[in-house]
Image 1 (cartoon, rainbow, N blue to C red):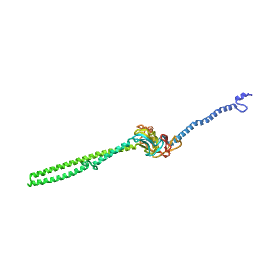
Image 2 (image 1 turned 180 degrees about the vertical axis):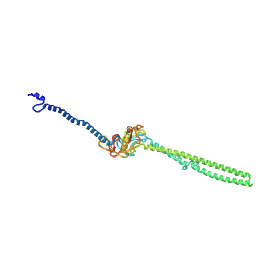
Image 3 (image 1 turned 30 degrees about the vertical axis):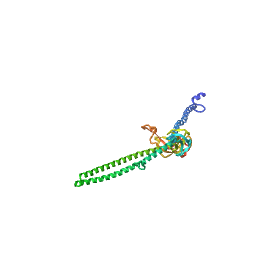
Image 4 (image 1 turned 90 degrees about the vertical axis):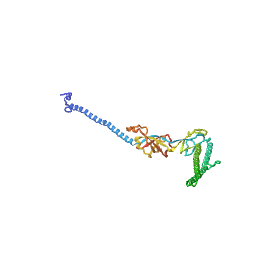
Length: 372
């Protein structure tokens, strides 16, 4: 009989032929199945990076599409027109009629200055004007001089004397022609002809003298009238200048505005042309933004745009495009690439409407939203 070890060695035993071979076959097939299972488990792990990449690309494309649909936002500053008011003559402050922060209407008095000697200067100028006008009236014939009358009367008299001299000359010429005819007919003597010719020469000389006198008087009168007219105009201009200076003693608001600063007290000396108060036209607030050249097509004059400020978060104010500058700023002379063109900006004025005039103040940071 074979021992158990021999049966195992020969492949025979209680369980049939070659049990050892079957055991060796089972051990050989187990590693191959494990490898297949491992490969199956490793395939999803290899697909994960591809899926993550695809999701990232889709997310990036969606983000870019969302960004492309977002409106542009440009930052600016709320601005207002400042008006510096003062007096062209200056003087000592007599009274201050308004306070800082008050609203004023056009023509409303702000500050009054003392008159000084301006009223006395006006009286002198008025007297000089009256004197000049009286002298001009004399030259024009409405006044009289002692003995000889006015220049206008002298001119009239000289004109009448010239007329009489011309009549005498005409008679002398007629007498001279008649005497010459009679002398040729041997009716008159030579002495009578000489007498007629001498009378003709004398009449002609008198006529020329009267004409010259009239011309001198007329020319002298015109020149004197023009000179005196100039004196009248100078005196009238002096009087008007003093009236303007008197008007400058009251400093008034040129337009409706709000008093931004006014630091004067009665008794202060205000120099001529110095600023006495600063006014702000807070009913004409606007935001100035600088739009790149590449986005200038998104703006149209007259279009309404939302405006936000940090002082009122969550609230939107209405702005209207009032003006787009016709000349760019901060740009190189030669624009070759899109990046260089993007550096060119155009100042754009966005006017604020009534819904923000009572709340907004000059100097606030503002943001203007422009749709694409």
